[in-house]
Length: 158
Image 1 (cartoon, rainbow, N blue to C red):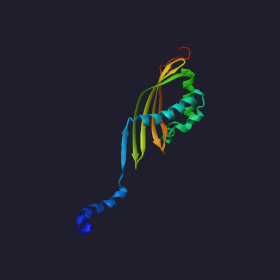
Image 2: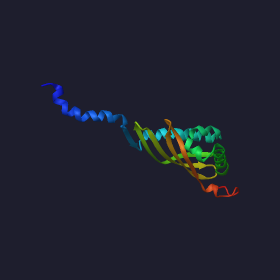
Image 3: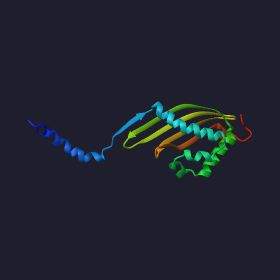
Image 4: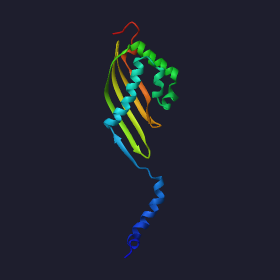
């Protein structure tokens, strides 16, 4: 018996799949992997280095295109400068919570959420980053600073 004759029914079933396969997407989803957290932290660490140096313009490449559709560079610069003035220089930074979802494969993408407790000279703050993978690089999509220091008048520093 010939091998083609033996496997003919199977080949007839699989042949249509060959035509459909170019539209197939093969992905693996990973949640909260330490490696993905570390990749996102590289971005926030570099961001904080520049903030400590008051090099606000240097932070711009760390932000996503989506961020700049909502906040332009002059507004970002104003926010960063005001934070430094009201809260004081950064004394310590501690990652408190994090979550990641990374899809690898045909449709690569990543979403990262990092929350930091940041001790400034005058006030403490909670700083929250939402990052995305954009054009193969992890970028800051949203950045939020929560601190009582923003509610206090200039003379009420702790």
